[in-house]
Image (cartoon, rainbow, N blue to C red; front, side, top):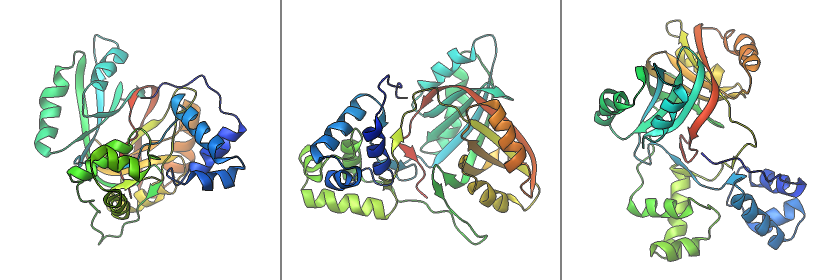
Amino acid sequence: MATPSAYQPDALDAAIIAALEGDIRRSTQSLSNTVGATPITVRRRIERLLEQGVISLAPLVDLHAAGYPNLLLIGVNVEHISPFDVAGDIASLPAALTVNVVLGRHDIELVAALPSREEVSTFLTETLPRVAGIARVTPALALDVWKFRRGCQAHSTEDVPRRQPPLDTTDRKIVASLRQNARKSNRAVAAEIGASESAVRSRIKRMQNTRQISFEYLQVHPDGPMSAAFVGIDVHGGSGRSVCRALATIPEVSFVATTLGRHDLICTLNVTEVEQLTALLHEKVVPIEGVKSTAPSHCLQQIAHQSELGFIL
């Protein structure tokens, strides 16, 4: 997780950040025309925002395309040790994407991605139990993801969830080259990986068209602690899809998935205070037709979070 910077962006920085939303590879000249500054000024400002840790410019890579089709949402209860210490140990595990210490039914909420069902089993039965202080884990396996960040996927009863094809070796090299700064030129990427510029250009275009990667998402690191809430939702029989559709329309909801395990559905809400969570639950979530019960866990501290893997819907 990036460390928030003490650097305070000014009005021009804010305009550049806004102009990058939706296409982080947008040309410097186009950005210059939008914000009313010279291209060299825009380039230097972006470099400073990166150096100061205000933003990250990495492509979002689809979890399926990256070879991690199994997403686990795990509630963790601890005993005889601080949950912050346990969360720190969990965050060091390669599979851990997000680790939050929370207030609710569980002490920690963990999001983990794994390449196979066998490794899911190993992670739950061997890897996690080795972490000192863990008393119990309550896992859920994401089945059908309806929303991730700003993506919303509408399903009908006949729909088959889309699964992006896996990246090949050259694709992975290109993505790795773009990870620090997705605005790196195709020529620079080609020189770095030993391929032609035209090959890099065509592969990037193909990966975008097949929704294996996306340059739509600009990661802006907050100047304060991140906060969010995981909400487990149980629904009345047959209403799962309609509830998912309704949840996906709520702006504060950043993730919605049907799950196998602890709840019928799990969503995440972007809130900073318990009062916000309470109001959002009672005003927007609980009134959805088909919702039977909710089990919220409000984030006290985010110990780890990576934004480079997700679902491109």
